[in-house]
Image (cartoon, rainbow, N blue to C red):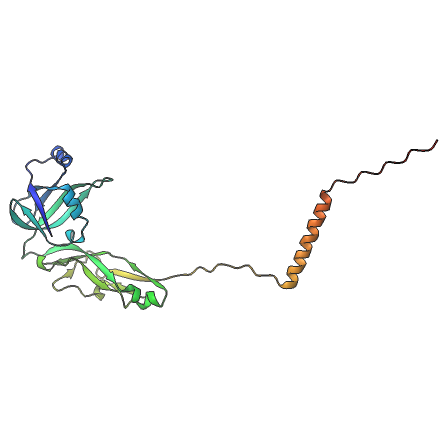
Length: 233
C-alpha cells in the first residue's frame, strides 16, 4: 500500500496545531540507520487510508521527495471525540531485521462446526489479533483461522493453528493463549402455572358468580318502608 508524505520543517505544539488547521497531519519516521525524520501528510487521504486493514498490518510504500521508503505503522493518535488524526508514527523497515508486529485474525467456518451447527453452542473470539515476529518480507496482512472443527466443551489455542512460514508467535507472558472458546447456550424455561381440572374450574367459577351477586345486592340501597294508612276517626 502506497501513500505520499512531505518533509516537515517546523516542530512543536504550536506548529503542529497550525499544521492541523491547514488540513495536514504531523508525523515522524524513525528507526533503521537514519535519523528521525519529521513528516506531514494530507489528513483526508490519511483518514481514508487508516480505515483499511492493510494500512495497519503490512509494509507500506511511503513516497517522500520523489523516493520510496519501506515503513510500518507504529502509532496513531486520534482526537478524543473528533474524526481527526492528531499524529502518526512510522518505523523504517530493513529487509534483514526481524520485526514485531500485530496481525489481525480472520475467523471462518464456525457456522459449519459441530459446536455451533448441532450442539447448540457459541464460538467466542477471545483474541482478534496476534503479536508475531518475522522478517519484513514475511509479514502477513492477516492470519486465517478455520473453526469448522470446533466441538462442545473445547477451545482453540495458538498452538492449535498453523502460522505462515517464517512467522513466530510472541508470547508476552502467555505461552499458549486461547483464541476461541466454546460456550453452551443455556435456554431459559418459562414457568407455566398448573391448569385446574374441569370440576375445580366449574366450582371456582360458580363461587365467583355467587360472590359477585352478593356484592351487587349489598350495594343496592335499602327499600323505604310503606307509609301506614291514616287512622279512621
